[in-house]
Amino acid sequence: MVPGDRCPGVSVRRTVNLDMGRKTMAVNFKSLGLVNTKEMFKNAMQKGYGIPGYNFNNMEQLQAIIMACVECRSPVILQISKGARQYTNQTLLRYMVSGAVEIAKETGGNIPIALNLDHGDSFELCKSCIDYGFSNVMIDGSSLPYEKNIETTSEVVEYAHRCDVTVEGELGVLAGIEEHVVSEKSHYTDPGQVEDFVKKTSVDSLAISIGTSHGVYKFKVKPGESIPPLRFDILEECEKKLPGFPIVLHGASSVLQEYVNIINKYGGKLEQTAGVSEDQIKRAVKSAVCKVNIDSDGRLVMTAMIRKYLAENPKEFDPRKYLGPAREELKKMYVEKCQILGSAGQA
Ligand code: G3H
Ligand code: 13P
Ligand code: ZN
Image (tube, helix red, strand yellow):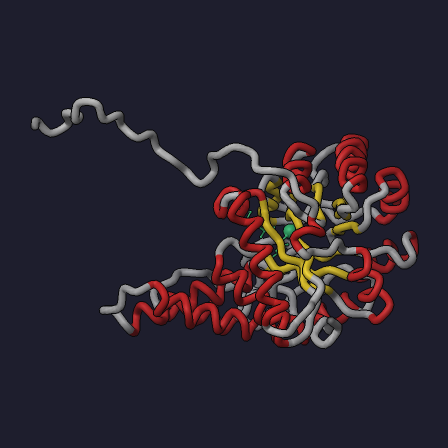
């Protein structure tokens, strides 16, 4: 046969991607063993600690998060961004999360687990996640004009609350990349707007901007220079306007230097950078901050350990050999984070 010819009667297969596929049956989060954030935030608020919102994209990250939170008995919010959902596939994701709930039980830890859509950018996406079993959705209308943010957020809340799903809104734009929002400067939250926003939308929690940003390049500091403190004055003002209301802190990775150094030692080229210090996180969770979002630190740990393993074992090509140690190190880091947040021992 001439190359390129097709066998008679055999049709060429079309390309199949993970982001294709028909809608599977709608499920409520309760049937997956998940919880919404109501009780979690009530307890966190009363006792003055923060629930971790850990992002994941693959099985090893999910395993590390669950094993860490079971081990240190921490409630946890698993987070999936729009991009992560496309990467994992929505149907597979549902079963992965339901499997994670099961292994938490099997390993002796009946810890509260929520599944959150991180930075949802439309009603349609939020609805789809709710229908696929998410127990909390974030609708990020922070880049929209104020009235439009209220309108979009209210629409999501109206649908979500019918399914007992809780909703996180956002006011104020973080610097860095918020997936669909690219902002060079941080636009701090205006405390004058928070009460009106919460009243008009009925959101269950609110993300505010007090100087953190997403990613690993949070603060441009030269060696020896100190990191600017977060705007606790804005947080306090928001708290006064919304007593007892759960506040969410995004962009809370510390940009763990140890792992930045390993990455650079083994061929990486990350620039000098700094994140949110442990002290600032501890201070934030003593206030109305009930949820603390951490993604970048997990990415750094995973990349550092994989780079190190492959550099030291150039003949190795079994993914389990380099993903396994990365997963172990991730678990260790998540346990440490839960201790910093004060969520360890609270489940
Ligand atoms: O806030 C953004 C999160 O770190 C998610 O990032 O959109 O690259 O998944 P991603
Ligand atoms: P980091 O990039 O600081 O980990 O923030 C993650 C985040 O806010 C996810 O919504
Ligand atoms: Zn975020």
